[in-house]
Every structure is written in structure tokens, then in C-alpha cells.
Amino acid sequence: MKYFITGATGFIGTELAWQLVKEGHKVNALVRSKEKAKLLDDPNIELFYGDIHQAEVLEKGIEGVDGIFHLSAFAKPWAKDHKIYNKVNAEGTRIIYEIAQKKNIPKIVFTSTGGTFGPSYKKPITEETIRDTDFFNEYESTKFIAEKISKDFVLKGMNIVIVHPTRVYGPGNLSKSNAVTFMIKNYINGKWRVIPGDGSKIGNYVFVDDVVEGHILAMKKGRSGEQYILGGENATYEYFFKLIGQVNNKNFILLKIPVVLLIGFASIQMGLARLINKPPLLPPKWVKKYLYNWGADSEKAVNELGYSITPLDVGIKKTIKWLRKNEK
Image (cartoon, rainbow, N blue to C red; front, side, top):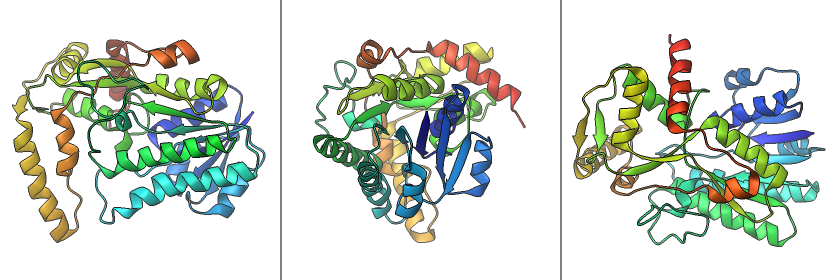
């Protein structure tokens, strides 16, 4: 089989490309940077240089493939021009679908995010959860728009499956999309010393190998128009860092900082960003996410796709082993 991947040099995209090759498939990869393209140096991976808005490049890359994995996204916390979120995440998705429809591509797996379902309250979110809070950032809101675009094209007869990874971590390209692994790396090296709030807020942490396998399973078994949460274990910040310390055989004292103070600090940074055009660590609206729980339930993916979850302690152990091996 041959597959076209957008976002192929991102954290998940790179691992997906290599896994597909490992399974005997060929990959057409959309890449923007020649430097990042070095991550995909293999005779079974053909590179197509361009971006999500270059129709002629997309048409060449999509020609004759058996399916498309659409992972390309603008996921940075801050951009000087906020229109780029919609341009890449929503309109870029529409362009892909229009070309795929013209080329009669059999199936597409679109990668959204668990964040579009919103925070969890009394129980973890599922695919049936109806969001009742406003979006915290442009990334989430434009991904939600892209989901709506996906469903519109499903109504036009296209076979599109939507997957929702949660907080992904594990071995792989240490890009900004691999923020959780950066956090693990900094903690074991004694460079991460804070917990947002009192440490009791819940997040869902998923090992990258599971997310990659979830994408492939969605391509094989996913039902058109359906959404699947590709998550892992739910854990509080306090438990997450405690587990890292246990695996690393060394715990560090972490300072618990009230979220209101973090929001205030982020607001100051945002003001500076506007003055000197330097990206803030996190905009205030992203920091507000720390006020909520983000638990998730992947039962639908487990039951329908055969998706499996790596235990958090096992995933962290593999991640730390990889970090130690690749320390510079």
C-alpha cells in the first residue's frame, strides 16, 4: 500500500511514516524543510516539498495513493498573525479534501486533538461529550472547525475518520509538539521545578507508539464520519511527576504555583511579546487550561479498532531510557 502523509516531519507524523515503512508500505511525505526532511531518509519514503496550500504539490503527492493521513497543523501556542491558525488548520484541511475527492482517494484519517471535546468534569470525556465551555485557544477552535469540514465532506460521500490524540509523549523528534517529553527530560535533569496549581488537576497521557498504531488502525478499521479518542492513562500532575521520579530513582521538590499567578505572569509576557515581537512561553488563555481537568476515555477506540494502551509507568520508563541513550 502507499500512503500520503501531511505533517510528516512532526512528532507523530515522523513516527507514523517509519512504522508504515516497517510494515512494508510506501510513503509519500509532504515536507516544508529540507533540514527536517533528513528525519525521513529512506528509499520507501518519497518527499514532496511544499505546504498545505500548494495544490500542485499536493496533487502530485496524492496521486495513486491508497489513503491519506492528514496530520499537518499549526499548533504553536502563539502567532503574531492569528489568521494562520484558520489558514492551516481549517482551510488547509478543506484543500486536502477537495483534491482527494477529485483524485478518488479511498480513505483519509484526519488528526484532530482531544482538546476539542473540552475539559472533563464529573467523568472523562468521550466521543459523545458535548463541549459546554468556550475554546481556550485558536488551535482548538480551528481544529474543531476542521472536524466540521471533515463531516461535511463525509456527507458528500468521502470516507474520512477523525482521531483525537491527547497528551502525547515518548521517543521521537523533540519538537514543540513533543512538549510532554521535553517536560520529562527537564524534570529528570533537575530543570523542571514547578507544578501548576495544587497538582490535583488531571491530564490524559498517551505513549506515541499507541497513537501511531491508533492511526493505522483507524485507516484499516475506522468507520467513516466517526471520531476516536487515542488516549492513554489519566493522571494528576502530582502523580505524573511522582511516577517520573520513581522510574528515574530521583525525586525533585516541585513548587506549586497558583494558576492565577501563572495567568498574571503570562499576561505580562504577552504584553512584552506585542512590544518586542518575541513569542511568550504560553499565552494567558492557554494557561487557563490548568484550571480544569482533562481526563479522557478511549474505550470506543479499544472496542472498535483494537486500540491498546501502554501503561503510564511503562511508557515513562521507555521514554527515560531513550532520553538517557540520546543525551548530548
